Structure formats: structure tokens, C-alpha cells
Amino acid sequence: MACASSGSGIRSRVDTGAYCREIESYLCRKNDGHLIRVVGPSFEIVSRWAEQGVPLKVAYAGIDRYFERYYRKGPRRRPVKIDFCEADVLDVFDEWRRALGLVSASANPESSETPIPTHQSPISNPQSPTPRSSLPAHLERVLLRLSSSRARGTLGDAFDTLLDRVSAELDEAKGRAGGVRGEARHALVERLAAIDADILRLARASLDGAAAAALGREADADLAAFRTAMPADAYARTREAAIDRLVRDRFGLPVIRFE
Image 1 (cartoon, helix red, strand yellow):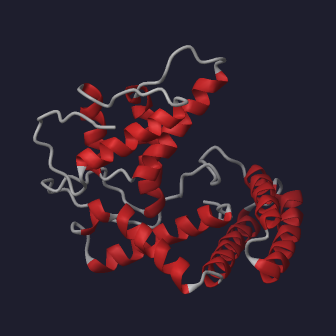
Image 2 (tube, helix red, strand yellow; image 1 turned 180 degrees about the vertical axis):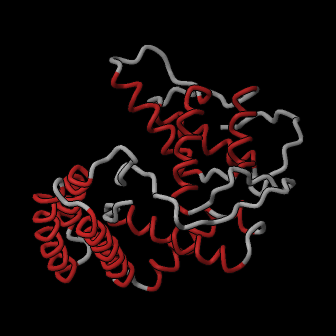
Image 3 (tube, helix red, strand yellow; image 1 turned 90 degrees about the horizontal axis):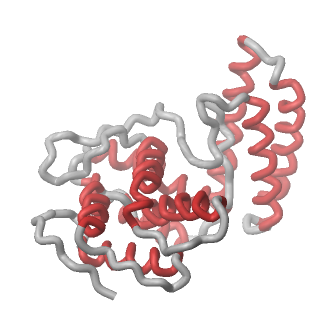
């Protein structure tokens, strides 16, 4: 499976041709084996993703999001072109950047704009609260996700014990969250952040050396397009945030903190 070069002279920190082939292969699988070539204008679109530093798994998540919406419309009538997925891919990329505190959209090596991490931005992913999400609704989603995580049993007895305690605490909080105001609400939000940090620490501690190293390499690969433009201390903080996100994905953990 090959992608045609557009001849546009795009320079990227990744192999654009290889990146294009991976996207083409993934799109083929999503289209039930029907091959839609990523060439011409489609190649230009995917090349921009590579140039911007969109990790492949982020691009896949955007493609998945488009297909989920497409399937909801009823039986498919024709294969999907990658062009149709662009808006969703860029949306997921924006969510990923904000989750890691990468406030700059530019990953162009020739750009003078440096991605400046800021870890005050809310994490935007399907498990995190949105500005329109109420605290009770957030707690409801968290409890459902924690139940699912516990069912996996991947973190052992210590994790199950913690989840039991956390779930009971959150269930109690959910019952009164709608009426919590002022200092009491602030205290509850701080408690959610502390619980979130505790669960992440336990999850990371459960990883053996090989698994932890693999997640570190994956985080480095995801951030490769941003690394040279970032100061070492900023990169270290962003890398830790990226590993935390990978740990959440690995164990199916929700974002418990509420912002």
C-alpha cells in the first residue's frame, strides 16, 4: 500500500510517506477492507497532520470519531475518504494538546511560535468535564467509569480496595454535590483532585520496569514534533502529563478531578 508524494516540499520531523501509509492502512480497515488511496489533496491533508505533529493514535481517534457519527446515520452507502475525517482529527488533536498543556497549535520546525506548556488548562477528553458539565453529572460519569475499571481487575487487590473506598466517597458526594456552594464546593473539588492524583500514583506504581519504559518511549514519540522547541523543564512536565494520559488509557481510568 503506497501513498503518492504531492511534491509540495513539506518538511517534517516524521517520515511523511510512512505516516501517510499508516493512515491509509487504518482507513482501509475502518472501511472494511475497501482501499481509498491517500493521494493528491488527501495526501496534502495528511501531510499537514504529520507536519503539525499529530500522533498517529490521535489521528486514529479522530477517524474513529467520524466513523461513529457516520454509523449513527444508518447503513453506509460508500467508503469514507480521509478528507471527511479532517475536522474530527484536528478536534481530537486540539483536545490532546490542551490535555498536555501544549497551548500552541504549531509544530512546524520553521515556525517561530513555540508551544508553551501550561498545566492550568482543563483536560478535554471523553471522560473529563466540559465547561457545561455539572459537578453531579461529572461524578456520575466518574462512578460509571470506575466501576468499569474495577471490573478489569488489572491493578490487583490494592487497587480494588482503593476503588471501593473512592467509589463510596464519590457516591456520597454525588448525593450532595448539587447543593454544595462556596467553600464546601471548593473543598470537594480539591478532594477530587487529590483522589485523581492518588489513583494515578497507584496505577503508575503497578507498572513493571518494562511497561513503564514502554510508556515513556510512547510519550516521547507522541511529543517528538514539539521537543526541540521546548525548554527541558517544560518538556519534562509535559512528558509526565503525556505518561499520565497513557496510564489512564491503559487502565481505563477516568479523569476524576473537576475544573
